[in-house]
Length: 272
Image (cartoon, rainbow, N blue to C red; front, side, top):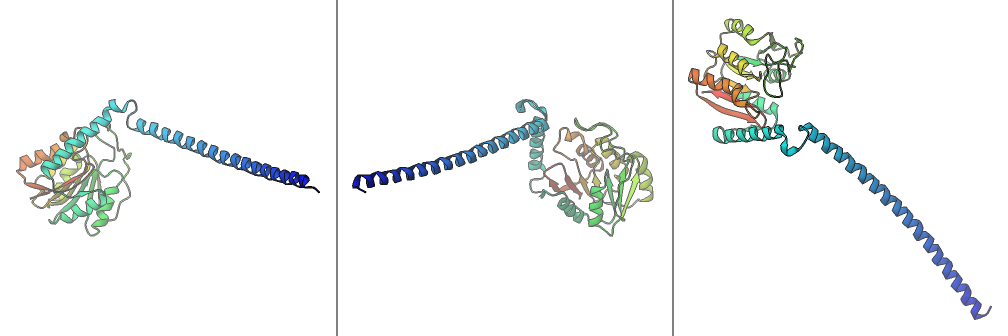
């Protein structure tokens, strides 16, 4: 074989190697393009899901144009009002992010000898927790279990929180008293004239809270702790539980201190 033929074979071999490399490179490019395409499809699906979640969130907050949504603006305004109230009235009062921690703290502050009462039991969540913290105390729970007796705020109507008249399952140291406060409290006060150590007000309404205080005002004494579940931070809070308490304070010439709050609606006070 002469030199020319050797050179031709060598050249053919190099061409074959280049062709094989080309094929391998092409196959790799096809593979990478497929992976990239699948990633693009996956990202597209994720973006679609995020867009759907965003639309759902917008719907949750009232729908329409976020800049024009009154519910959001009301929330912001009342939060600002409540923040100003905190700065003015209770800047150093401890705040809790967990409701159970809040209850433990305020229950520990109730050091006067007397009764433990809850107004607004509903499904029994809070009264069962309170009674578990105080297993040696009898906790009395008052509720008609028929929902709100009247409209409350713009998103809560008469009949909301209706348990159908059914009593919840409660701990053995809980005593439930079924009926409207104005019907059950007078007889209860006659049977239990002792001071109140702790009162949990979870009835939302001004009228219901006023009924509580009208009946218990002579049993609320120095050392009594009152925990309000809807004291502030909602539209119209100044006309609710807060108003009823301020009227009680004015009528009885009480002095009190704020002892705890949450970042939601809850505030606790102690009578001096």
